[in-house]
Length: 379
Image (cartoon, rainbow, N blue to C red; front, side, top):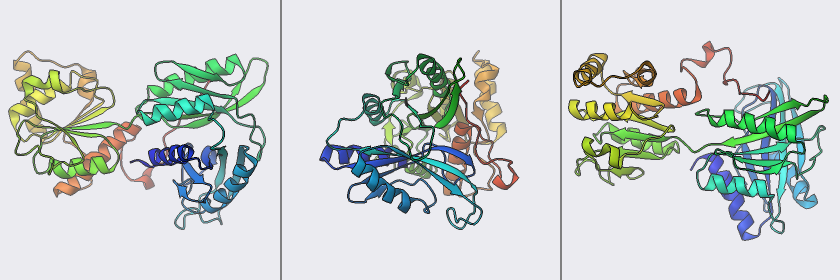
C-alpha cells in the first residue's frame, strides 16, 4: 500500500471505529522542503501517527498541535519557517516556508460531503480532486465549509464561496487530470473585483498499472519491484508453467495467446507496458497490439537491432505506426545505470517508468537546476 493510501485508510478506520483524529496536510511551500504539497500525516486521539510530512523534524510538533485541534474541533493552518540551521531530514539544511493544514476528524461529526466523496473515490481507485479555500492568516482555520469535490468526469459537490473561483478551479483540476502524474498545489486566484482567494487542490489519480508481457525468469524481479512500489501489476504469458502464483504472488496473471489480447488484455492511458517475452513472434504481436492502445509507455527489452527486425516484420504485414505512437516506444529499455543482473535491470526499468510518468528525463540530481517538476497552475 502506498503511503498516501495508508494515511487515508488509517483515517477511515479511526472514523469508523469512533476514534477522533486529525489530518495534517502540506498545503503550501515556498523555497525548499523535504516533502511536497499534498504530503499527509494522520494522528489519532492516542497519538498514533501514520505518514510523513517532513524528514522527521516536524512530525512531533504537528502531532502536539493536532491534540489542540482535536480538543477545539477547529481546523488550523500552521506555518514553519525553515532556516539554514534547522536540520531538515537526515542532516540536510533546506531553507523554506511550509504551511500545514491540520484539521479535526471527529467521530461524532459527519465528514464534509466533499471530503467524504473524495475519500470514497480514493478508496475505489478513482481520480478525484478536493479543493479547499485556505485562510489568509496563519493559525486561522478559515471556513471549513468552503470545499469542493471534483471527479475526473466533471461531477462536483460543494462550493468555494464564489462561482468564479469554482469555474477557475474546475478548469485547473481538469488540466491536472490530464497529467499522468499530477501534483497537489496551492495557488492564489484573483477575481475580477481584485479579490484574492487562496485555494489548495489536493488531487489524486490511481496508481499506474504495470503490465508485463512475458513470465520469464527476469520478469520475476520486475513484477516484484513494481508491486512493492504500489503499482498494480499484471503478467501476461500463455505458458502455465511460467505464469504461476508462486512466481508472481503479488501480480494479476493472464494466460493469453496473442490472438486473445483484444479479448483478455485491457490497456488504458494509465497502463505502462513492458514487453519481455524473449520470443520474437510473441514480442512482435505484443508490440503490434500495445502500440494501438493509449498506453503512455511501451518498453521493449532487447537491442535496437532486434527492435528493427520486429518493426520491419510488422511493416511487411502492412502494419504502420505514426510518429506519436512510436514516440511512446522505449528501446533499449530502462535508464542507463550500468545494470547487469536481473534485479538491477528491474530497477533500471521501473526507474524509467517513474521518470516518464513524472515528466523527468532521469540523470543525476546534482546536474539539475531544480529537483521537482513545475506544477500546472490556475489562471
